[in-house]
Image (cartoon, rainbow, N blue to C red; front, top):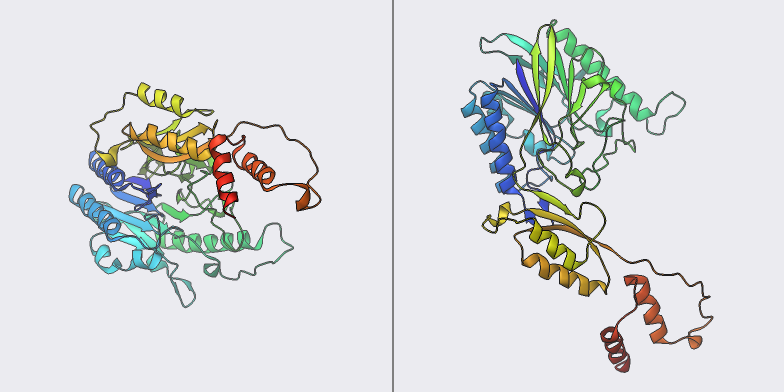
Amino acid sequence: MRIIHTADWHIGQTLNGWNREAEHRAFLGNLGQLIADHQVDVLLVAGDVFDGINPSGDAQRLLYGALADFLRQRPGLTVVMIAGNHDPAGRLEAPGAVLRALGVHVVGTMQRQTGGVDMNRHLIPLRDAAGVTRAHVLAIPFLRASDLPGLTLGATGGAESAIVTATRALHAQMTDAALACAGGVPVIAMGHLTCAGGLESEGAERRILIGGEHAVPPDIYPPGLCYVALGHLHRPQSLDGGRVRYSGSPFPLSATEIPYDHGVTLIDLAPDRMTITHLPMARPVEVLRLPAAGALTPAELDAALVALSLDAGLAPDLQPFVHVMIRAEHAVPVVLAEVEAVLARHPVRLADIHLSRPETATINEPPPATLAETSPEVLFLAAFRDTHGLDPDGRHLAAFRDALAEV
């Protein structure tokens, strides 16, 4: 049985106001081609399908259109999708009756019945073309404190926190039930959380807290699980010897992710072995940091963009994103205006801008005892230096004095 594990699509994400639909459309098209080329039997999507709890109609159409394309390209494909912390869990589950008829299983919330978790909803059989069950998926969506039975917040005295203890107990309970139902075939778990030891991506991932707890150890997943397909951390990475894995995001969602090797994880599952392979995927749009280290003046930024020889004929929604670091040698408003003028001359989209100000000497002068010992202009000079890291020029002084004269 051949399985693709992917996660953290964040459909509907914008970057500095720029829509990223073209990138998502290209990624989903490439994913469909991978499913067909590798004759994939199962697609696992480990949460954060959408970027927010109120996805637009366009975002939802993009998702369901992609699922339809996957099934057309690979009839018989089974899709298992769980909700992440960004997802509207109930809305994701809403079309479940129709989707299940097509082989698409969506688990957005924890489902319980008398006696515990409803395993009929959380344990999904994976069947081959002949209808023989070759594996099961234990689908566990993003957990909230209310999902953890027996949790007593603030409890102390044990070797680990109350949150970790309750999370461990839930996973042990569900795994035991899954293995009892599986009849000896492999069981794969899915989850959306932070495992201790995983490398995070600054600027894109929210620190999801369950009762104040940020991360749980990977050994909350019992050894009876042959593989754990996780979402939330955007860097592709493996824990626990490779058994626990984050497939990562499809393309850079923040500046931190620029160096990542984005892609999906291919799992070949046989009765006596399991092979895990990272499949890199080309970025639909280039994402750049200028410069790679340090900072540039606006003039140096212009030269760096010229040197890239960018294609001026690219459609606007396929133009590269640039994260720029600027050395502010003048007042901030002036520098920002210069940067805006530079970017307007090139086929790029600004993702974000950070200003690096020159260091100024600190003069440890005691503050005036009263306002009578200073003047508005002295206070203005001090505030300008504190804000911009440099002295005001004649234009700023003239504007201040004009404003002061009107008071």
